[in-house]
Amino acid sequence: MIVLDLSCANEHRFEGWFASSAAFEAQLARGLVSCPVCNGTEVRRLPSAPYVQTRSTPAAEAPSGRPSVASPQTAAAIAASPSPAPGTATPAAVAELLGALRRMAKAAEDVGERLPEEARRIHHGEAEARDIRGAASRDEIEELLEEGIMVLPVPPLDDELH
Image 1 (cartoon, rainbow, N blue to C red):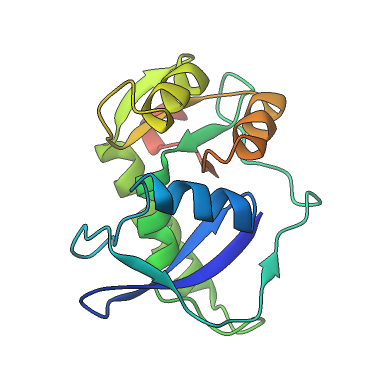
Image 2 (image 1 turned 180 degrees about the horizontal axis):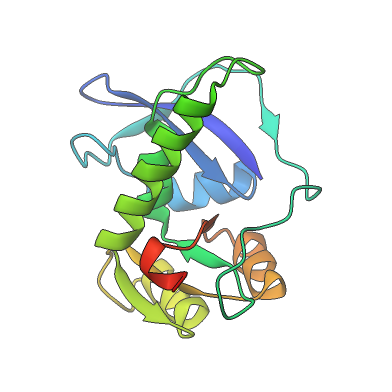
């Protein structure tokens, strides 16, 4: 997965997470990349040093044993949040980011176990673009990412823990 620095026509700067540069270009061409501030789809890539996430960090597990996953819109909004310099995150900053992540996920439509299918339908324009959340296995998440469908494993919501 790569993180790209992006800017919209209104000069809002944000990050986007993509499976690859080719996945970004394909989604941009289809109008699937939008600014989390103004929803503008006229987006350009800014020069940046690439960041590649390794698979060494385990995904957060939902009670079902399957990671909870947020949609591309939610993931882009989370990515647009200011992030501290590497190694400088305080516990309070991490807690604040997790709280924001949980609030965004709670506002998304819960599609449950249908998440991989619904994410593909949205990605291919067969369903309305919207924020969704649900459950998917690690293999399903990897398949979605390989297809250029951006998903983000998130910690379970408080009401999912009880």
